[in-house]
Length: 348
Image 1 (cartoon, rainbow, N blue to C red):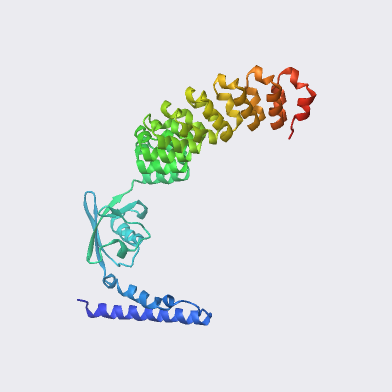
Image 2: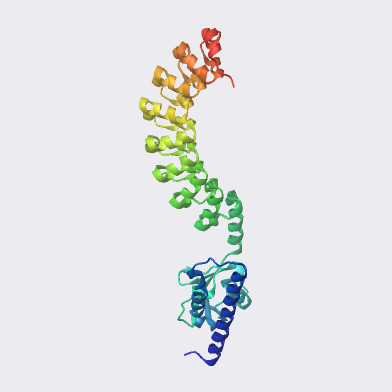
């Protein structure tokens, strides 16, 4: 049952909110805001109801702070305080700086900006909170890698196995995975974050994750050349290879020999990723007239990778120079001075 003091506090609080809402309504009327809907006119009432809900929040809350080794201190908190205010009181009582405190109620961590009334049970007059003290070296290292991920290389060795710290580093720069502890190279979430930011970080992942299709796909989408570090099975996966060469046609160098010799697949890639990947097609395809012609129509400079026989083929050379006049340098000698070929060349 509320005491007389609580009743007076509630009355004063309610009166203040009513006056505030009346002022807001008057201000809207003065501004000519007369086209609002009924819901907007009813807002002060609903706001008033919301203000009445946390009645018990007008009372103080007993906060019992425990460390991992036992009780640390007790304090009375105003439920309208923010968590940072509670940390300030704990700092005064225990000497633990605010920025070295992590507070937990059960398994839920309190964040500095939260209100005490939002993180404590509404029917309880007290809260038993656990404080975990953050190591200053850890705190400094976390701040450092959050700004420059590659600084993971200089943090203490034991902290390179801390998952929170490593995640902060690879989010800032995926290449920082190189300096993480070995067990982090096998952590799927850590590796996925790293390769999404820097595809070539795949080289630092464990063998199992370099054979994981989702991880490898994320890597090649970030940087097609990451295909180099994928497992053999995924270097033969059409979807993975296609995603890789769309990012860089040079990634086709690391596709399986089977796919490099697959005529239909190579023709598809030439259409989607450009003619220069002809460089890494099987030799039999580099002497295939249809394949070479498809390549030089996409990029005349692909003529460089055709066989000598096709570089002496008038139709192939004409198609190449029409795409890029510089392809003339890779034509057979007898065609370099051919007036018809020279006239067909496109420059610039």
